[in-house]
Length: 187
Length: 111
Image 1: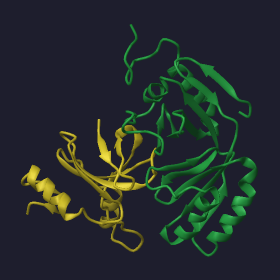
Image 2: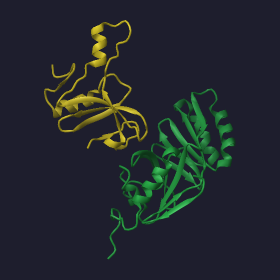
Image 3: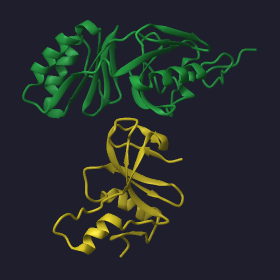
Image 4: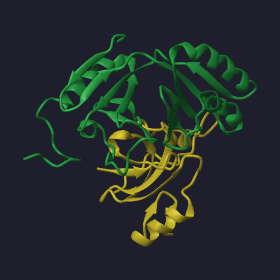
């Protein structure tokens, strides 16, 4: 899924080009080493359910002992070297998982609604916004959802179910399928 | 529809985001135990109408296990608590006693 693909319905669905992803896992004893990730990207360590993003890089909170690092693909080897150095001696790991997942973006006025059709989250604007990340169920598969500063949603899922998620998002964004959950019907 | 608050990540997760893990607080009997204890551990499960204690996993979310106390008849949730314990916390037991006076579950509850 290397090429960028787009679909325009009530929201714009894009299959985003690959980016670097590094899975970081470790307990509280490795917190100092894990914090290296934030320093290298110039972002804070995210708290529970938090996303700390800056342009095309950032950290996503995945679970109490797991953080996902997003960065340009070419930066992955350098980050890995630094992180593995920082985590040495701790029961922790930094692994290049760039090829494990695919990434989509959902943007436009009805983006919120398209995702709300597919996952059991409260996506009301005052409950979910930039700075939040949620791992959840999208249709029948696991996915993670967060919001960019520009109001677009980003969705990641395992590569093996990438086509399913793309199809699912396109069906949910079919023209004329607005249910106006978060907006007023026009006319 | 069941909704549990995951004690690990704090999310109010609904049933489809969770995986059930069966009865809670089983004591494992392994090699060297009596046949009776071992078969009890393997096969004997509570199937109450009312108060029940279960293990659940926030499978689509943070991926962690936790415990839940709920009523199988009304689906009322009395509370959730961390997996790292062998018995329910006192506050959960107090909540249940308040809502279901005289309840029992295995050796817990009214004597």
